[in-house]
Image (cartoon, rainbow, N blue to C red; front, side, top):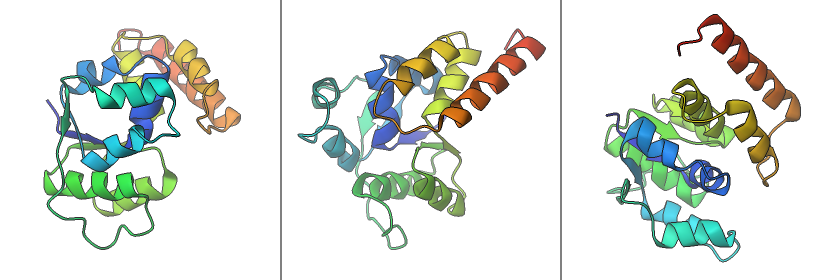
Amino acid sequence: MAVVVSDSTPLHYLVLVGRDAVLQKLYGEIFVPPAVLQELRHPSAPAEISAWAKSPPAWLTVRAPQSVSQGFEELDFGEQHALALAREIHADLVLLDDKVARRRAEQESLKVKGTLGVLADAARAGMLNFRETVELLQRTSMHIDPKLVQRIIEEHETNLRKNPGG
């Protein structure tokens, strides 16, 4: 299985739409730094997110980076720690949604996937209905451009028609 590190945002939204279990099915174990759990447990987080973070599933491994090096100052606390951990453990994939954090990860030669990418992979593996799940995601506080969502759904459905087996 791939070594995968996640920031808080993909976890937050996958939990909100009840699809967090796809992470284990797709990747096995997910690593997060304590900073990510701290963000998920924040008093302003929805109760279901905070409860999930207080008692995370067994496939979520909490591991602190040895150091949070310079170069990530423009990112939030969780992103800084997630990228530092990903770099240290030579992660195969980092789950991030923030554009600036994604760009920074790519500068570090880290492969990045966002929440929509995880959902698309899960849909291709037959774990969920992509359109239905994205529509659920749109009902949350996640900021997604509706035109982008429509384009992604259309691309996904076109790919399914071209390659129905996966």
